[in-house]
Image (cartoon, rainbow, N blue to C red; front, top):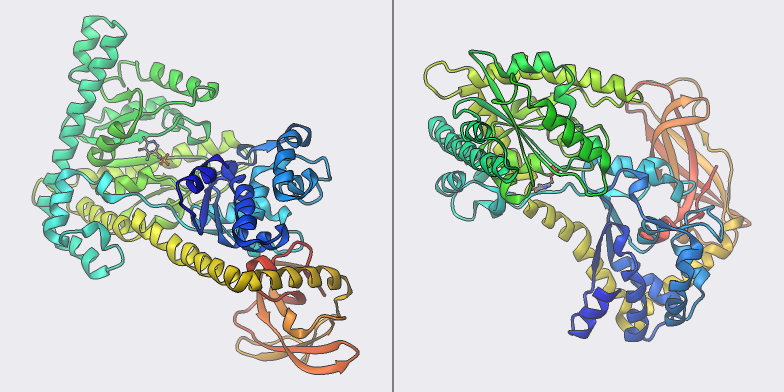
Length: 595
Ligand SMILES: *Cc1c(COP(=O)(O)O)cnc(C)c1O
């Protein structure tokens, strides 16, 4: 609220606001207030305007990660706001209460944010799905896959993360402003024209810089702790220039499972010390100051890598920050990520790595569930979800060792005609093309702009034009729908052919709908069909609009549509009525009636 007031004080009146997580959801309350003042409208009208110019992005796939406050605790703070808006504390409270929570239910910042935003999104395709599942209870009657939470996959800012060497290469081969040409495949595909040796040498330069940087940091780390001189000297020569280098750098939250690689210490020791094909691993990270489990994870990792068989090959860098991240995502060969699926909403460090030709080895979670292809990296597992965490750790650590031993290491050390690993470099190029085209922040911003910001800004303008006429008529429409909806009824839909059908066959479905005082133009009647899970449940469905075929009199209408059988299987169908209009109208709570 303070932020919005500060903007107002300096004369900035944002038309659209984008809420990043639920923490800032109260900005909508201040905007409602400002909207009422600016456009001389009542609260109900402002409620038709402000949410339609608000975007809400959620990042957290864990319910416990979303703020909730007991009603008694927030009420005192709501009193002045209620006065501001000319309403009651309970009304404001109810905006943040989940359906069925009751008048004393807690205020959820997520629910408040979601009720205040027409556009809601998660930050990767998989996270969108997880969020729809997590929050489907807030949209009663709406099938989970239709819950209005979409996704915009995150991206990283290329100019911030690209190495000096690769920036030069991209400038030469792709042209100046290569970072802004993410939507031009002709530009992106010029990555293929980079000479393999040139790309590889540029990468080796970054790796060698990384190793010098690690030695520096290690010496400082040990000196700061007054370590014995022998240890400090050893730190000055850790790691090797030409060894396959794996980086694991992130916040040490438990779900990121930094310990996974250590599940079988003997196998790890053999792997890193292989005389012909050795591997070295750089860990970096920090835990949240209040996260004791995370801190314990670091402690146990640091203790484990003190073993004589590991300590020349595995290091831990303290105080992970952007400077360390930059060196790592540029100079490592492999970027390792093994979160417990589906808890990584997106993950972005792997994108920074991919941009620099660092190959991802990752669980199919977050962005990698959509970015992974065998031509540009490796998957640990196949995107399974587990109940038993211990079993999951055991299975996935084995999968990880297997991928490293059977695929990653042999590909890296395969040097046929020259010192350049050809197959590896090919994968680096695929990885770079993927990062430039799909995981750049410029692509992400363009998506927010085209899908949310511009349509919202245009809509806000229309709504307030002509003394907010359009917004006022939405108030009336909402009131009418709410009052008249309980009368809406549908009969059981009927098809015009019985028995089984073949792929390609068409049939007609009709349903009788009683609309009471509502007009057909105010509703959408839809056939909903999909594969049967059992006799009365569909696995997932598809909605097809139905049209009025006949007026039957007495507010009854016959609706029809034609379906063509697209694939084999046992299918079922039903029908439903929803309000006709934009997302805010269509997904009005409780205004959906099923046959
Ligand atoms: C990119 C980055 C992160 C986020 O990485 P994830 O893959 O999302 O865990 C965290 N910290 C720093 C310093 C970074 O550069």
